[in-house]
Length: 236
Image 1: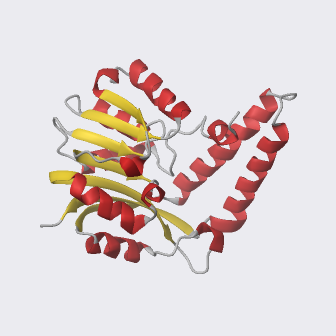
Image 2: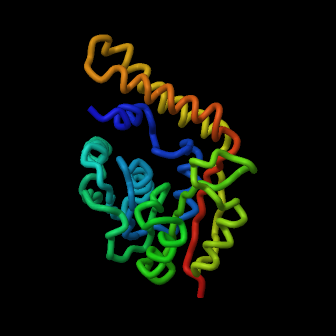
């Protein structure tokens, strides 16, 4: 049993993202006709699947290290009728060496060792006129919890993308409602599991994780940690 996987059970996306935000970002990646899309660190690849539903001529690859998450993505692709256009690969996102028209990297920059390294690695993998949807945390306020390891403000983050050779097509940031929905569902899934499994092994570990996460959110980074979604294209 992996408690973190249990926490993902009630999430649509493994990021603070609403349905409306997902629709907005997919539209911002247009044109998508016949696009080859790669989702790096995809988890269960919900955003990729919604993109494929929105554009029937697009194809996609989801890359992640966690087999259980990829299995969830494959299952969802089957029941939503896009399985023939979606491929899932169990691998480290940072090892991807292909090319694509559109790349999605939401919360996965750690696979390359940091924000700059991710941007520098992905840029040459984009085909001419390609787009990158880059989701990354930023420092909303000062001070903020030291253990989060987030040093960039929103302005710093945008300037860094420019330093790495990108131009910004769209910027959105997660709202408080999106954050609260994400974090409460993360914790809530663990609480539901505890209610439904009163005698299961591992209950103390699950309860401790729920308590730790909730405290870290409400007494730590709520209101201090931001999350940005940037649609980028390589500059000329």
